[in-house]
Image (cartoon, rainbow, N blue to C red; front, side):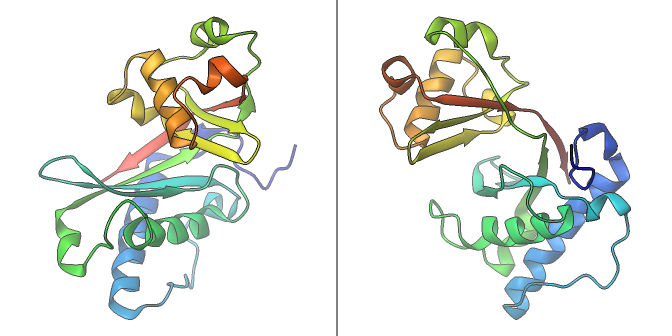
Length: 197
């Protein structure tokens, strides 16, 4: 296995993770002020240089409602670069929302989810899949041809029922809610380690 990829989420300490939250917030602020992507002169932690996949979630502090969420599923660039890029994208390019303004920043909560490497989940049929997935623990990726969607483990808080979770995952991938029963798509599973302000 490659050693330049984060393989164990426990490699990331609280301090390193909280640093990523600050990096995400500062990157958004800098981009909104200058229109430029920030460049780090110094990388404070060695682990930040390893390849890692992250999702950045922005929520309203007052209501908890989602304000932007963008991420990577597979690690393909340094952890800190992934955070900078996804933070800016979550703030300005999530197609579900209008771009965030500088004035809005103090009212937002920033969450950085670091993903473990996704592994295929073998299942015989729908019931077998229901038995194998672990609510509040598993993030899932659904893949069928050109269709793909993912839900972070956080989504279980809104959809704690397994059947609902899978139906909404089908919809997110652009398919019918019963896509798993009908087509037996590929399912991959991953864990996350979440840091927030």
